[in-house]
Length: 104
Image (cartoon, rainbow, N blue to C red; front, side, top):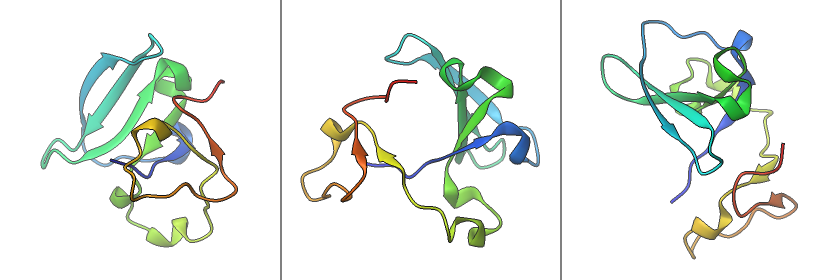
């Protein structure tokens, strides 16, 4: 379907508690790690070799943030995996469209 994600430096993102991790090899051939709440199982964020490894960037799910006002001025920069978009969701006008992961 679709997912709304924000990419932030790991130094700008703080997690309370100890998330559980499940890793897999992505289509790129690189490892990606999905991190879940250790209590309820909610997906919180991802990190991976293609995003600078464990100390690099975090791909976060905005619904987990305590401060929703942090999202008020953020705008999407691109759309990825557009071939998987359901027909009833249109492309966002003016954004770069990528069939998969964009080049680094």
